[in-house]
Length: 387
Image (cartoon, rainbow, N blue to C red):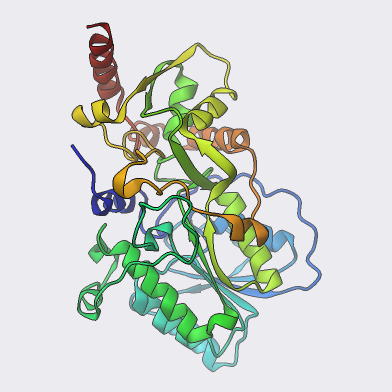
């Protein structure tokens, strides 16, 4: 069984929602102590209660900024009860924003965490260009047209979609693995069109992980490793992986806003290249239990219908069209101030978040290898190795 790039992105969309929309976070670790910023800013956040929103908003508050949220009021509506909240839906109702702009309201910056349909950006950014000086848009690594080139930077070509196909995307339900990346690229273009290159920042995150991640795409590994025993590990131990803690990403956003940084950045990590074995053994170092890793090669996993990314999460075999998938160049982001907390911090905080979920939720993980499948594949692998 093979997985095409289209299928792979579709699995990502189905597992975690689109552009962090709808990711629940019933518990968030407290943001680290932050010094008050030299200048207090008025920041409008489109979204703000999904995955990267809470740590970003918490950090902004800690820095002394005034934050306004605009969202549907459906995801984690109990968060930030003391903040100003404007209620609306970017798909069909931005009248609350229109009323504020018509009344002369202004913000220093807008952070857009939610747009996955270009029309949303055309309407909201077009409106807010009259009322703000800066626009930070959350795009995606999936915006790139080609994942086969290792160490690709922000100058790599992005995906394209025809006006006719774009017009068919009426709601997020119309987003697929085939059009998701090109749609994000079009959203970027609409942000730059409204605010110009001189006032626009685009961040292209990869896999966003840590406390609050409702997709379980990273959580599977801390949870499985904490369980102990024989753990099936995927592919070649040297295969690369990339991810970014939501707290690191959200807090960096605020620093970008404060400095007025513009341009395009790959928002992934860690700082130094990491292999899948480095990730697994790094998580292993946070526990004290009886555990062993059995490495099963990619072809054998595919033969037994074990999917990269969805079953063996975070990992994708670095071959053919995925040869560069987990090796995005992050030099520009580091130069622009992106920092990374230790893997151990992310692993422990992820487990704390997981354990805070109710039992029914924990019994139905959204990603990862089911125990029965893992056991069958390990048994077949041992039989192959001993034959």
